[in-house]
Image 1 (spheres, rainbow, N blue to C red):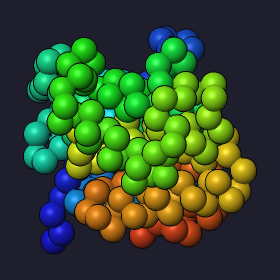
Image 2 (cartoon, protein in one colour):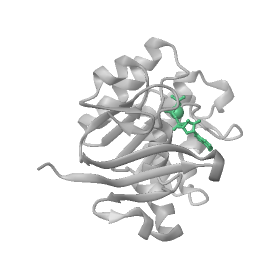
Image 3 (cartoon, helix red, strand yellow):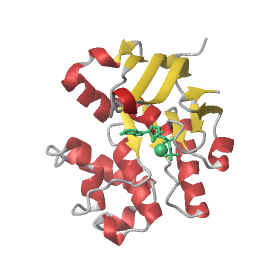
Length: 222
Ligand SMILES: Nc1ncnc2c1ncn2[C@@H]1O[C@H](COP(=O)(O)OP(=O)(O)OP(=O)(O)O)[C@@H](O)[C@H]1O
Ligand SMILES: [Mg+2]
């Protein structure tokens, strides 16, 4: 059995309450191995974002558990969850979610704000920008970058603290197909370098690039 990074048990997320409840996710059992490259697919509203948000601890389950390296996220407490979000799970959003008033370099350093001025971290942020082909735009603000460049800045930010897990929610949704293909190949490179990567997408090419495809329908794995 491969090394299990994440184990999901009876995971349920219900939104709203009482008469207006929506059961957005209901996964009985799922293991993800360290080093997996997984596509999470399915039609709009099937629960992809709900699932990634739970894995990234951006949201809490209504019922059930997520174990990361054998530890239940529910047992981590607020400070532990903060550390998990910052150091263990790098999140990449469809809408990039960069801070408009900060430069590309400052955005990459956001996870260590306000301690981001240390020389070591700045060097690492610069190196990541270089590796992602953004050396020339360190001082640009998001409004002065193309969509593909903004997404690469967001990837650099997600990588700053070298997380084990990369969660990407429709990372190519706002990009043209060539730029999107570049982002997918970057995620593939990260996976080749040992990261566990989950990508939510309804783009078939994303699913084709991944080693494993999970399909959700009405919140359930099919
Ligand atoms: N905050 C919320 N309150 C109530 N219902 C919600 C909330 N967020 C999502 N939902 C509902 O939960 C279900 C799953 O939504 P989710 O955003 O996870 O789908 P998705 O697969 O990511 O869709 P898309 O492909 O359009 O991004 C949908 O029926 C949606 O309407
Ligand atoms: Mg979504």
